[in-house]
Amino acid sequence: MSRALNSVPRHVGIIMDGNGRWAKKRLMPRSYGHNAGMKAMIKISERAAERGIEYLTVYALSTENIISRPADELEGLYNLLRKYFGENAQKLCAEGSAIKIIGDLSALPPDVEELLKKGEANSPENARFTLVFAINYGSRSEIARAANLAAAKGGITEESLENELYTAGIPAPDLIIRTGGEMRLSNFLLYQAAYAELYFTKVLFPDFTPAHFDKAIEEYMSRERRYGGSR
Ligand code: FPP
Image (cartoon, rainbow, N blue to C red; front, side, top):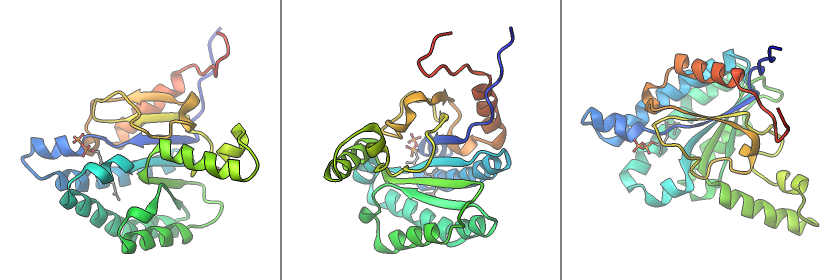
């Protein structure tokens, strides 16, 4: 008997890796790669919205990146955030999509923090598409924070913990894509990814086109999801 295909995923996460190597191949600074990565991210988010995906979570900056990347690279990333939230995010929201930020914004420069919060606050309600930015995000600290909050409110259950995660109210990711050839999750949505399908590609993120994204979605749709059940 033929098996039904999965429908389009509701929530896709992307670990946008490979910007630095993409720039290095061109003898350019890493910031050049991040700039190209931002352009790729904008195209992928448009494609995701077109396909009826409800949530796209992009790993823009991990907690570890903030600790370990040189100051000039971080400043370049902050400038990209200033640019994105100054222009593109407003356009996205004007077109009816929403922005959500997950992570600890308090470590960011105050103007960037304010811009991100404003972008989130200006988002329409009941948007059909939400672009979720993981910024200064790390799953372990997210889980520890949520556990403390849930315990203070009366106890830790799966439900009370989930209610305190940054992603409360967002369905768990169905599919997580990682570009750039590494095969790991790097502290991204670890709790939420319990039943996510994983898709790894060697394509460096700036080269990751909507056609590559479509290929990942088609592969996801052809996979069998059992959630611990039997065949
Ligand atoms: C990992 O590549 C990527 C990042 C640390 C940053 C990802 C950010 C973007 C794609 C831009 C996002 C958009 C905004 C608005 C900030 P890497 O530098 O670790 O690459 P490498 O593994 O080749 O060194």
